[in-house]
Length: 628
Image 1 (cartoon, helix red, strand yellow):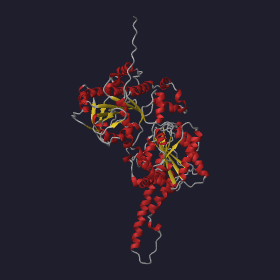
Image 2 (cartoon, one colour; image 1 turned 180 degrees about the horizontal axis):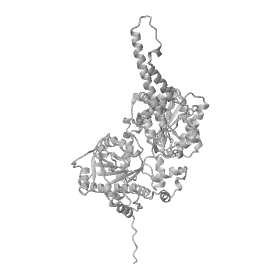
Image 3 (tube, helix red, strand yellow; image 1 turned 120 degrees about the horizontal axis):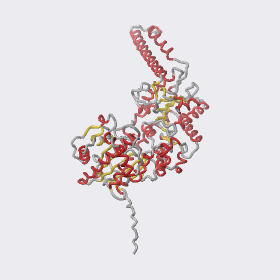
Image 4 (cartoon, rainbow, N blue to C red; image 1 turned 90 degrees about the horizontal axis):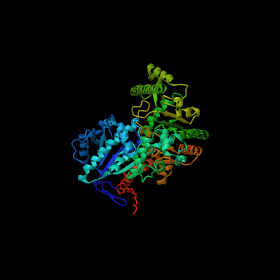
């Protein structure tokens, strides 16, 4: 694997020479944080830059309102990209060229699409005439994607003309259908540009998995066109299929998604490119346990404020479990997780364990506000904390001066006499205001449609509602966890470090960054073999849960068995000793090194060599036979 500019990589055929190759990488999420691909792109930059150095440039749409704060402009550049950008500007296009202010500081070109949106009907018609993509100019997202594709195509064509002087190998790598339309123009015009297309999840697959609980069993029976029309996404799926067919190198992120591509896109991927992370951002080495303890104390504060006004439990014997991600009740495995938690609650009661589990379900749902009861409880807890600290200060000072001025016969005085009546009364009133006979509520926010929220419906129907007798407590938090969050006061990464176990038994998950980020933070995780990450671990790593990752076998198995297996995995974890969990956290972080981009970037290099060695098949022309 190359690690520096000028070092070449060869597979069977031509060589990728980073010093003579310009790599363009395009995604809708470049300088635009809207989904998981943003993490893929941004975290991979240092590894890509270590290979291609200045011969690496990202492309994205100029649509994020804060993009100017993220990009440092490059002015009057005479390099290949700078000359091409200047030609576009001279032609009347609005293009931004600069350095993206993230780790690695890559070059980036952002295209304004506002002007091109005025031609959305013309652009849609052109795409149909040239490539057979069904028209739907009323779809705003589709129109934006087509406009972005048009701008990229213009830029790449100019770039290929400018490159005639430098004669570099140009590889243009497109992530997802939203960035990939230029593949079709490059192939049609025969430009001297090699293309790579990575689909992270097929559009149709995501829709089908959300609506068909037997998605994998029925995968080979779907008619893609009928299903795409049914969901109103035929133009989107058609773009994805055509780009997969016309690219020089077609890749996806996991074997699981590869099966999906073969059926729904009609093409088997040329190579699998698993996702990684910039592990240096997470690694804590000997401080894993220290950070866990520090942020666990912050979670303790939340738990005390949320639960202890109703009843208390031993925090030293409390474990924090969590799951998080986009709200897709079935796809993300929230349904399986809740059912397994119900079973875990039964197992812990039967075993008469004195451990308590607090399960955090963190996702994003439409809500009015934080529930006033929750806010009041936390506010009164902080008031109680303030009162307690003030009493401690007062007693401490008075006790010290009493002792300092006493003789040898001094004995400890009545401490109650050292507290002013004001603080004594305030302390008592705060406790009385805080304590309640009601059980802690299970959701922290007022949801817009709480009666139809699948998580809430399940919790209420199955009585997992924070009863004092329950060993498993639930905190459903339908918002992001950030340092400005009034309930937690820490960011999401710190929250993860403070937890004991991440639970991600996804049904449909092309890769799955949340379990990977979990182990990178030294937090053991449960994933599934239907997620790309879990499938990769199962295929390539001979490890046990001792190393921090457990893979739940879901593929082709009955729901009842899956739920019982997940419950037993969690139950086994609960019964382990603290010493074991400390060792497990350290091993989990060590294992995460395997997923550093500097180790996984070789899969992308393989995809690039496939692209430069691809030879398009010449269309056979049937010669007409002349009669003699």
